[in-house]
Image (cartoon, rainbow, N blue to C red; front, side):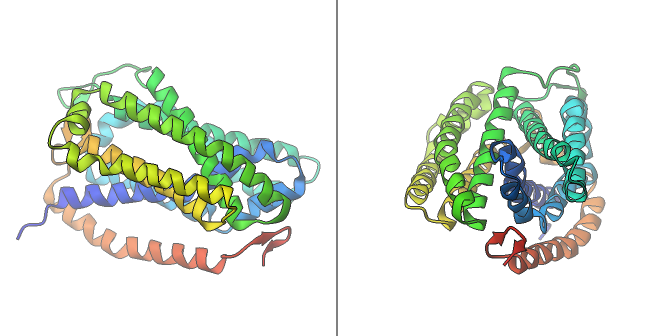
Length: 333
């Protein structure tokens, strides 16, 4: 039996991207919400809630981007020229917020500057990620196996809208994370934010989902042709269930349910993108097999992935386990 290494690697990279969105999403979401929490003690607790794990969360971004370069070089060579501007902006923003994490605790007089860097870096990085996603979804022009678009191909109403939607969605993840990890007035304020951000996120997910099939005939066929609808209709039904659990959990002031439900919304949205894309890695032109490296390279790299991915999962799980529970003004307790 010959393994389909291109498919296996596509699954690994998809998992890495999803893991990044799930883990760094609430991290970035806290930065997005930062300007709305004025008390310095609240901001300290917000940063302490993610301080032990924020840099480890970004491991998955490196794995996804590095894996794309090594395993699907043709896809990398066509996606990157289309996204140079938003990707560079995203990386610079992540640098800003990363430096702010370390320097904010080293000064009193200049603390407001690092607060600004943390918040703006989080917002800009998230918005750039949403633009990159929207650009890929709407399709990247390719001719003779090379990028055929212009410098501003990424700048469209759809990509800007997905950028906005991701900012709101990450803010929801951040609010529900704070519900889980804090208490008293900070938790109460996070409940109020989540109650607003939840419906707005659902509304934006709905608009993006309705807009996407009109971007490409392939998407329309995947979602609305018979009998394929039998396989796709569970996704919106599960989104409705996750939405119900989210709102119910917030109203009943449950702590874990809102966070899990908001993660479920992202997972289901990611599955929806997979349904639209597969087997294309650069829709609607390049499939995962068209863009894959030679079989020998895929097999060699897979050996490393089989060793490293479980290690990353293990130390990530351990970090979250060690720093479980509520975070107080002085850190975890």
